[in-house]
Amino acid sequence: MNLEKFNLSCDDLERIIQRYYNNPKLKFKINSCKARPFSTSRVGYLGDHFILELETTLENATQPETVEVFLKLLPDSIPELTKYLNAIGTFRKEVRLYDVMFPNLSQYARFAPKVYLSKDDRLLVFENLNLEGFRTIINTASGIFDKAHLQQALGALAKFHCASLTLETKTGKTLEQMFPKLLDENCWILKDDNPRVNELENAIEVLAELVEVIEKDNPKLSEILLKLPDFVLQIYDLVKPSPIYRNVACHGDLWGSNLMFKYSDDGLPVDCLIVDYQFARYAPPAYDVNMLITLTTTGEFRKRSYNELINFYYEAVCRELIKHCLSPGEIFSRTEFLESCRRHRTSGLIDNFLMNHVTLLPRNCVDKVFSSPEEYANFSGADKIRMCLGVLETDATYRGRITGIIRDLIEAL
Image (cartoon, rainbow, N blue to C red; front, side, top):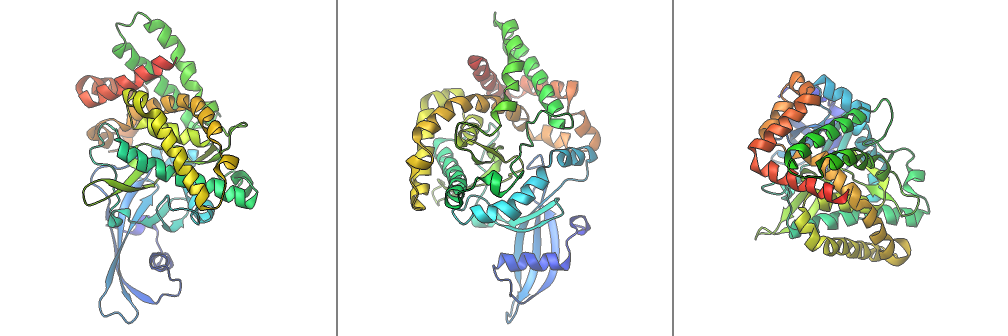
């Protein structure tokens, strides 16, 4: 593969090797460098992904070694997508998080992959988590996690949130004071130049069309359609920092593909790391907790297990804070957390539709959308509605999940 698109200098490659070996004085020679696509199918919506392979010979070594790292690049093959990502600042935010904030947070816990290089607000080079045995959950077509995976994911989230709480407590400053504007909202913010405003309006149109099909025999259909837009539009307020509850650095994009798990020999998940922080925000931990639980479970499961899961998360928070000689009750009380969870069950339900009506589309549909600038441009308005309605009719997995997601929304109106 042509490496020109990455714009990596010799100094960049040397820095990657030094950070890989965690030795800034390391002496070595780079023999070759090549890249390959991470996957034949698209693995994410907001970046292109590659494996960068560097053959290097260390000083005094008799044999060369191969270093494999994971490379994430701002897409450039679809101009409209590039324009969209630049407008909402996804790469700028993630690059700054890894450059400025995460070095301070990572001293307290490991919750994300190591970064070896960031460049030009368009490129990030990470450790290749696959080489450590981390991977996304198997069989995620329906986006559903079992309890074992949820507990590992909630444990990773607790580490991330507690790193924020610990840093703030030990410095006596908030993250917003330490890192001004870094956690400003870039996902759901109501302003004229934000393309996400039109995206949200389109999502509400898709929702209405799906509801008309799914609830066609519901005598309250007209009333439901009238209430849904205002219910969804609450998201603009729900993502804001709370003036009442303790805020932390939240991930804000917790769907299945952004959680990577490590497994024991008998196939049980034993560890989890969180990736893709393009929509990080400053909000109560309950925002992330409810997003994670709601996006990866069914309403029936939550009725049985919701309280158990949020208590599992809170106990994980307590263990992390105690590990750093901090008092959980003083910093983040159970009462405060449970109160904030009641508010953010609503944001979880809204995000469940806004994200999953797209992320649950079959792989062939996703690949088609990103196959050309023309196909990408068509994935909005009436064409997006037609695709979602078509998949609803023909794909039983999508139909089952979206029906449940919509009925959970309706129940909360």
